[in-house]
Length: 255
Image (cartoon, rainbow, N blue to C red; front, side):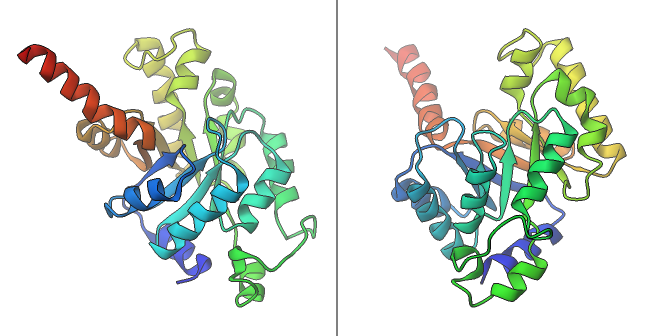
């Protein structure tokens, strides 16, 4: 199944779509995660990891073989990096710390084919030319702004007014830090800001995404019950450490 077909299938799926961040560039990590058949999508984290462009392309290829939609979280609103990730086969981009609607619109125009601002090529995104015309004419990358600050919330109405935005993503750690409560997700002040995002998004029929920071099934269910449909279920490293941390508590109680 090619990228465009996978993308169309993904967009038609109105149920919660569960994914994760990959921060370790080794392909065995990708294989191990996707072999669980838990994930609908997987995002290469270029913001908070040492993953290279070569490693990202390998990860995208494995996703394609597993029929899992590949995403890239950019290091910033970087046009060159975005174009490369799309050429390598990313179906969508998560963009950190979006606060300015005009900057987002300018960025999108520079990575799209609509105004001939981006050069075409034969690469994984169009199956090395087998679906060149179809890809050019029909593929619109999924653009997911991450709302991670009070400024982002204040400008959210303008950010989601663009036709190319159908999902926004809550970044809990950065959002909590931006209001002086780093990592405190239960404080009333944080909850009020998060609820503001939820209210504006639902009013405008925009899909909601969020990072469930630890791989807890209870936390995952709670997010889905609140209407989040694009959910990052932890990261590769956190998924490794979480059961070890739980085991450590049990072992210490026994010794």
